[in-house]
Amino acid sequence: MTYLTRRNLLQNLGAVSFVGSLGGIGCLSAQMAQAESFKDYKALVCLYLQGGLDHADILIPQDAHSYNSFVTNRPEIIRAHGATRRREALLSINTDADDGRHFGLPPELAGIKDIYDQNEAAVLAGVGPMIEPVTRADMDAARVALPPRLYSHNDQRSAWQAFAVEGARFGWGGRFADAILRSDPNADPLYAAMTAGSLDVYLSGEKARPFRVTPGGPNGAKMLQTAGSFGQTLGDEKARQVMRSYFEAQRTSSENLYMKDIVAAQGRAIPNSEKLGEALSHSLGFTTQFPNTNLGRQLFAIAETISVQHLLGNSRQIFYARIGGFDTHADQHKKLPGLQRELSDAVVAFRTAMLELNRWKDTTVFTMSDFGRTVVENGTGTDHGGGGHHFVLGGSVKGGRVYGRLSDGDVASNYYTPFRGRLIPTVSVDQYAAPLGGWFGLQSEELGSILPNIGNFETRTIDFL
Image 1 (cartoon, helix red, strand yellow):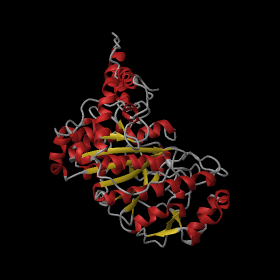
Image 2 (cartoon, one colour):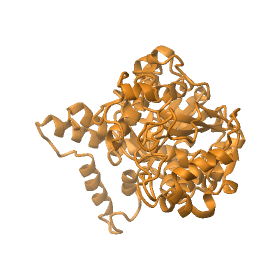
Image 3 (cartoon, one colour):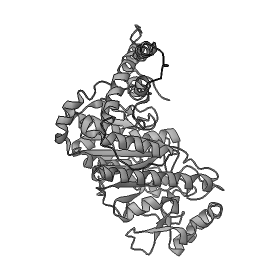
Image 4 (cartoon, one colour):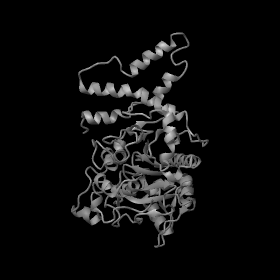
C-alpha cells in the first residue's frame, strides 16, 4: 500500500505535467558568462525496462553444449523465433570466459553490439536486489535475509529504485542528486533530476524533484507562447493572460494544506517551464535523427536538455526514461524482438548525438528492470524471475566485457532456484549503483548512507567505470 503524506505528495507534484519546483535558471546571459566554470559535466541516464527483462534472451549461450541446454529449456520460444535465435544468427561478443563457453547478443541488438565492440558498453551479469550475499543453499535453508515480496512487479521495481517495497519515498537517483546539491551550492535543484518518462520513485529526493522534459521543450509553456493558440482575434492576448492566470492558480485560495501545496507548485510551473524553454532556444543543437519510437523520443528530449547544460549551469544531472512491454508471459517472440530493437536503435542515436555535442565521455547510460525472467519457458513466454543482465554504456565505460558471474545453462545447478530456473543474483543493486555514484562524484561515505546494503558485501564496487 502507498501511504499519502504531504511530503510525498510534493515529491510527486515535482514532475506532474510541467509542474516544477523552486528555482530557475535566472538570467540566461549571466549563465552564459559562467558557462566556462562547468566544463566538468557528468550525466547519468537510467533506462528503465518495465515488466521484467528476459536476461536469457539478452546474453545467449553460443557454444554447442550451452546452446543445446538453452534450447532444451525453451523449445517453443526458440521454434517461434525461427532463424533469429539459431546459433549462427547470434552476434558473438567477447566475454573473457575461460571455460570454453561463448555468448552472443540477439540480432535485434546489433547497434548495442557495435558499441560493445568499441569498448564503450559492458554487460553486468546477474544483478538484482540483495540484502546480503546469497546462494541456493542459503535460500533453501532460509538462513539469509531476502528482499521482501520477491517476484512482485511493483515491489521489485521499488526495490531496484529505492531499496524498499512499493510506497518508498526516495529513490537512489534522487538521493544521488541530493548529495550533489549539498556539495554544489550553485546547482539548481530544478534541473538536477529530470524525467523524460514516468514519475517513478527513482528520481525523488529530499531536495531534488523530477522535472519533466519533452521533445522541443515543455508543452505548457509552448501552448502559451504559440501564436494562434487562442485564436487570431484582437482578444487573443487577453485569452492568453486568462489561461496563464488559470495555470498559475492566481485566484485560488484554500485553508487546506494539501491544496495550498498544489496551488504553490502549479503556480511555479509556467515560469519554470518558460525558463527551460528559453534555454532550449539557445541550444548548441545536433543533427542526429532519433527513431520515432517511445524510447527514441525520450532520449531525444534528454539529448536536447544536455545540449543546454551550459545554460542551466548544473554540473551534474540525472535523467530517467522508461519503456514497458517486457512482461512477456506469452508470445515472447512477437514482443521482445521489437523492444530490443527499439532499445538498441534509440541508444545508438543518443550516442551519436552525444558525440556531436562532445558529451559522450561525460555521459553514462545504464539499464534497470523489475527482475529477470525464468530460463524455463511456460509455453510461448516466460515468468517472473530473479537476477538479470544489464547494459552500461558511455565514453567512460570500461567496455567490451562482461562483469559479474556468467551462469551456466543447467537450471538444476546452484546458479538457479529450484523453480523453473530463476537466476539467483550475484551482484546486488547496491554494488551496481556504487560505481555509478562514484563516477558521478559522490564520496564513499555518501554512497554508504544512500546504498543501505553495501556494507554487507565484501566487494563494494565493480570497476566498470
